[in-house]
Image (tube, rainbow, N blue to C red; front, side, top):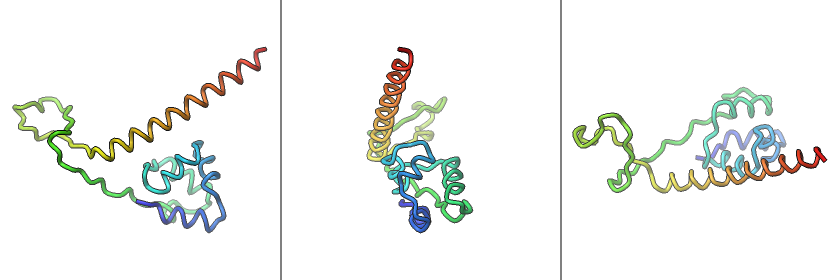
Length: 130
């Protein structure tokens, strides 16, 4: 679910997605996914954005959209104690495969970004030591 309130206020105040990404110490593509609703904005990030935009949190905050869970018996995850066959499968959580794949892609992109930053910092440290 797109964050229309956030997008509207950001544009009205004349800020770019890059500027908000910098406030959150993330890359612009990750922030873009947050604003478009593909990646969750955590509470601390909402607070930072509201502070940066100089608006009350309520002016930009929007609830995350409800997660649709597809019951697919071929794709279940069950880690509750005593939730084996004797429990009748009542504590089984079913994940939406499409959502899980998208989350994995986002995490892989973030890992790649972090690896690049680490490499850059290591190179910088190496150059300072010589």
